[in-house]
Length: 402
Ligand SMILES: *Cc1c(COP(=O)(O)O)cnc(C)c1O
Image (cartoon, rainbow, N blue to C red):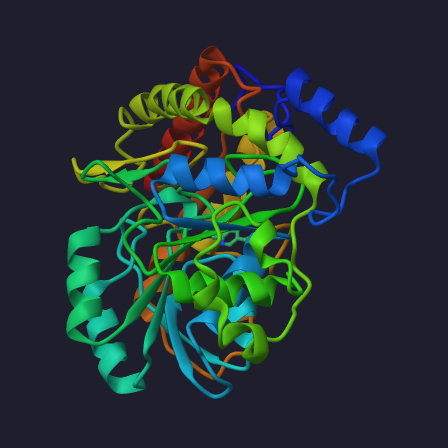
């Protein structure tokens, strides 16, 4: 197949904005990078970020951490998850999620997904009963939102406390309500490929003062917890200050300084991502060989990546599709590969898990492709990429018929 090629870089994010660079430079000049290192009258960036993110998210409390994975681990400990406990999570997720569950000594119990790439609520109900788990770590992988009202109904009826993994849904909404505000705790990542970029970083939100007190101490606050942006009342720390271990997962002022100006632009960037995602999706929808996940009307996505399936293809065809698109400059990940590669692994390569059977998920992943949409791509770039994908998917389908 010849025709158009694309020359953009799929891992190139936008530069850090100039006002963020200026703020970072000021922090560097001050030498006060540690979040509790402050002079009288100064409010450190880490605390300000917590206050601003809590306001943006509509949460009572926010804690800034070193990574999204650290936030997930803190969430589980703050909820009192103990070694040997079982924790439910989606089978389609990123390695830091089962990693966080494993790190607290708990056992991940993986729940199947549907072809729309969201948690399968029947499997969730079944496994909630069978496992005796008290916590669901709901991973909103690649930004796909399940019917959150139904998820919360299943959780309530099975006595599950919900932690939302919102690494890909910062700014997404279900029925107008922000992702991360349904569960008891919402966790976010500010790693370079998420919706805010500080290289590494994480945010944890909750409305529960006792949980936030525990989370703050767990993050490594020593007894300086009053220097946080949205600390609960001192009484909330009465037990936590003695009972919670220090995990040293504090965010520093340098990263917080570059995140605050980005937060001010987040709504604009969400609109820019969605414009690009819509352009791509419109072209992919013209191709009968390509299946896109259904998005309920109530779900507002943040289109920082796109996923689609080529139903019915086998592993050889999937590999040749990835090769053919790569030859034309379009970098895809395929979730059906036998070996983990780059950022992409699946539950089958997490061998520290106890044996599980997820035939429904495996079948979906075997034909599932994934692509980043960095904001350095223009809408016209997304149209070019869409045309290349449609041509190659059509050629593959024609080859299979011939
Ligand atoms: C990125 C990511 C995380 C957490 O990532 P960190 O790199 O630890 O910040 C968690 N879940 C999902 C689905 C992710 O993509």
